[in-house]
Image 1 (cartoon, helix red, strand yellow):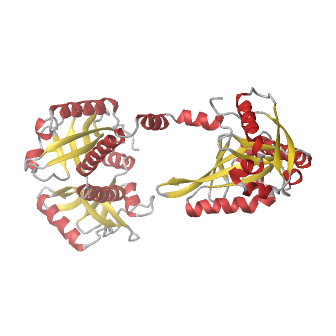
Image 2 (cartoon, one colour):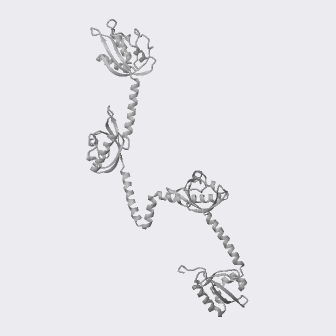
Image 3 (tube, helix red, strand yellow):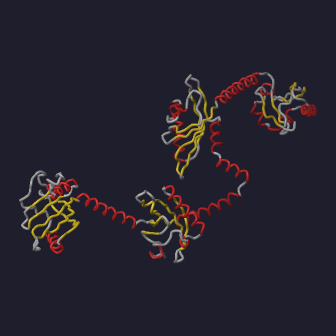
Length: 518
């Protein structure tokens, strides 16, 4: 930088230093193209050696094409000066650049042109950025103009500045410059109230808001709309100066919603015809998932969901020696003995294929080696008409199985006693007037097999008893009817043996079972 003292102050040198600091190139050229003066930034812009002094050398033809050069020269020689002229150019090595050029002609006292001088600014990056911005804006505008939505730009006060397209029946003159708060655009005043609030909220919160409204167009057509409202432009103090309204025609959706509501009303009327008890129970089931969960968790059954690989997706509770963490995600066959794998697999596959529930029985062996018995019910879980999972109810019936086993053992024990006792034991139904049980000893006592006794049907007593003892039998039966529980009624009769002879029978009878009224 040159000194500013009066002794060595050189205005032109000072100017060149200043331009260097501002990244501005300067050159002064004679009429025959000889460089009379330049700054170092001129070297930098055109690709010369930054430290090389070019004074006295021929200037570079930096024009990219002759048409642009001739156009520039015509303006320069006509006006004597050209300002802020943007032109493509080339550097010393041929690289393309873009310059902002300011050139003026210098004349002598006679008005003759003696030289030209001016400044150059490399605006290559700026021009490229502007070109990208223009292309981006073009793409954005194309997207906006072809958008199925109506995009409206409004000022803070609601004045409509721009719209990408118009609904049928409207013209730009009817919309541009009008207020978005005009009642003309809304079916009801109440809708306008919501619009005012939405815009006020968006200006205050600077966030997206949304509202719906309906409109009757000038041509009489009616439509519903949904609008999303968002800030669009800000001023230098970061205040919102415009908003964007993105509006979509939702008439078709509204019509479907109305049809759906009408269908719901019809379904509701049909539902009202159902029994009150069923309606209440259905309502409770729909309204209370927690109650169902409580019922599931407190159910004595093990309720589980299985996927199509028969893996356990969820379970309400596990057997005592397993945790949910051990069970969920595992294959159900992990907990089923090998001999029950096939029946379980066949049951699951059957439900997947037919959609019909099945039942089967299986065992579970505890970690201590004890056997538990389970009855299993498996059914389908439908979603959108397809089976998506299986639900299984496994009930521990070990105690029942053990009780049944003990009962069978007890029955066998009693039966062995009955079969070996020398007495004829029977159970006689007084209402049906027939034997409902006879011990096998009848063959020894009367000579008839149990099958022969059954074949006699209801006439066995009248046919076998001695005619003189019929009255005694009837009296005994009446005594039994009037007897107390565990009271023994004795009787003695003569019955005809299979060989035709009568044998004396000593009878001890008691009440075995009573009717509901005693």
